[in-house]
Structures are given as C-alpha cells and as structure tokens.
Image 1 (spheres, rainbow, N blue to C red):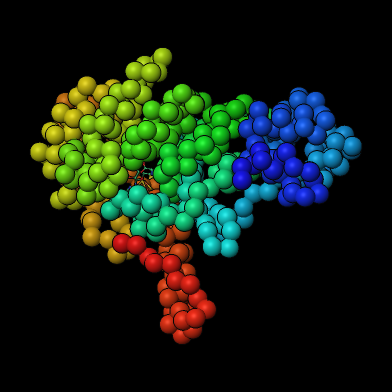
Image 2 (cartoon, rainbow, N blue to C red; image 1 turned 180 degrees about the vertical axis):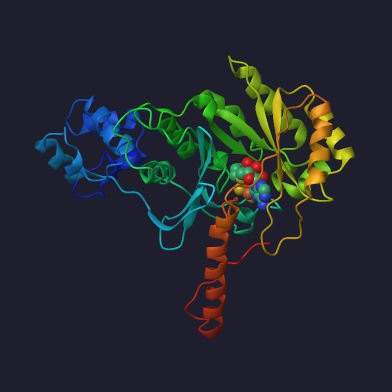
Length: 387
Ligand code: SAH
Ligand code: SF4
C-alpha cells in the first residue's frame, strides 16, 4: 500500500498517514480530503522538512483545531538511528533501522562548500555485482518514500534546524547508497521530487544524482518523470567482462546501455553529461588496453568518468590497485580528452564506503543467526548469505 492509499480510508479503520513520505501534490490532496485549504500543506512542509519537526504541537503557526485534526489522521515518523559515527574528516554516517530485520545506511561527505548526502533506496540489492558488499547481502525489500526521504530529514536535522536561510549543509544528494534506485522507481522518483522541492530540501537538478547499474527501460522513463543528473555504473569496457562484474549486463548489454545514455543526454534541453562510474579492480579492469577500449566506447557520449579505486571488504577476491596504476589509467583517459577524476574514499575510519557498516552489522547478525540455528534449528530462520 502506498502512502497515499492510506489517506482515503476513514481515520478509525486505518493507520495514520505518515506526512514525511508525501510529495507536495499528495499533501495538498490530503488537506483537501480532510476539509482544509491546500495552502496549509506549505506550512506543514516547512515544519517537517525545513525545521525537522515531528510533533504537531511544535508547529507554532498552526491553529489548535488543525493540530488536533492532524493528530487524529496523521503522523510524522522517521525510522530509528541505531548507529551514528562522525569521522575526523567530517564525514557522518547513520545506520537507520527500518524494521526489526532491516537497516540501511546514509553517509554525509563534506567537501569545502559542498556537502553530499549518499542515500539508500533498497535494503540489499538483487543485482549482485561481484565487487559490491550490498549485492552480497541479497535483496530484502524496497524502501518507502518516507524511508528514503527520512534519510535526508535525519541528516538535515543533525546540523540543527536552520533559523535563517543560507545555513545549508546538504547541497548535493546522490542516490548511491544501498540498492538499485531504478528498481524502486516510483518511490525513488517521489522522494527525489521532495528533495528538489523548495519546501522540501531545495536540491538543484544538477546536484541531485541518480546512479544506476544500467536498468535500461527505467533509464528512458526517468527523464520524463523528473529532471536529475544521471550516473551510470559501467566498470567494464566490453560485454564479456561486464557480464561478470555487473550481471544485469546480460539482460541489458552495453549496446543498449549506451543507447539509453545517449537518449538521456539528447532529451535534456541543457548541455548535459552522464557521469560514468568505473570502480578500478587490480588486474581485472585496470590495464591500458581496457582504458583504450573504454575511450572507444565512450568517445561520442558527453560524459565524465569517475575513477573509484575498489573499496575492499571481507570475503571478496578483488584488490584495490595502487596509486600509480590508478594514475596511469587516468592519464590515458585524460590524454584522450576525458574529465576523469579519481574519487578517493572518505571517512575511512568509520567505514563510510558503500554498504560497509551495515555489511558488518548484518554479517554479525547472520553469524549469530547461523549459530542460533545450530543450537536450536527449529526456531530460527536462516537467510542465505549470498556470495
Ligand atoms: N545500484 C546503483 C547505486 C548504488 S551503488 C549503482 O550500482 O549504480 C553506488 C556506486 O558504488 C556504484 O557505482 C557502485 O558500483 C559503487 N561500488 C559498489 N561497491 C563498491 C566497492 N566495493 N568499492 C567501490 N565502489 C563500489
Ligand atoms: Fe546493486 Fe549497485 Fe551494488 Fe550492483 S553496485 S549490487 S547494482 S547496489
């Protein structure tokens, strides 16, 4: 059931609707349905998203009558933060518990005036890329709109509620946390509308990036639904290697993926580039020949190539290439005219890289479940650990 479905039923028979997960249009509809003026939604959105309020009594300019009505029909509920760490370099990381079995992680990375929040869209991921710790956890479930936007809400609140405009910490959002955002399409699109909305988080279209491993049909649909920046996780310059590293390539091979990238750039009315993500795995995809193959593949696509040295995690065969190898690969691309920055991992001391902390927490949970199952096999359900 979606957040909106909850609105239409009577208050006594349904759970309260969580206002955190409603877009501006949906909130307006909610107000009309409870017999209030649409513009009330603007007041409430500011309280919820700008000021991080989760209690109707704290909404100072809302009348007593409306507060009571809202309390009867609605709530503002974010998932619980079970772990919070701040790195010496200012990186912040939250593990957010969605329900008894499922957690995701959110990371904030400051960089000068820019503050980037990395948001999760699914618990685990079904696509099982061979170098990704989230993929190794398997797929558990999609996040709701409220659960996606709550990550921004939690991070925003952690800086204290801004009394004045201008005190903005989160300037960029990347859908690069756990999960494949295009496989949770509707919820991710709605959550991104809230991120972009001035009454939400006011993130500019070029500063809101969706990263996909190449779910081609939804790549075509994305631009028609919301105008955001697109990143594509490529990681290999040919189908043979990409089939191995990013198994969804077997379904949507490079020819189709490249066509979808071109279509996205062509549709946009501004001068736009696709960001190509390329995780460098020592001896696997980081030699000169592969760099030249990559140049050939991307030569007609307006793009920049982010080079990401592999972030190691336990029980994984890959290695991070040394700095010299990474720079040599970069140089080949740069000589061919590509903008290709090396993305170094931030917040190493708090395991801020993709999927790491939840990975560790779940690994421990699974080990404990397996142990429990050994000593009491009838009671405990064991989820198979992939990879
Ligand atoms: N599912 C989407 C978004 C989440 S993954 C996607 O694949 O694009 C976000 C980025 O982190 C992707 O580019 C992914 O390839 C990269 N990534 C995953 N595991 C990594 C690792 N161990 N080291 C470095 N980057 C990794
Ligand atoms: Fe899923 Fe992205 Fe990880 Fe691949 S890299 S398993 S698509 S989260």
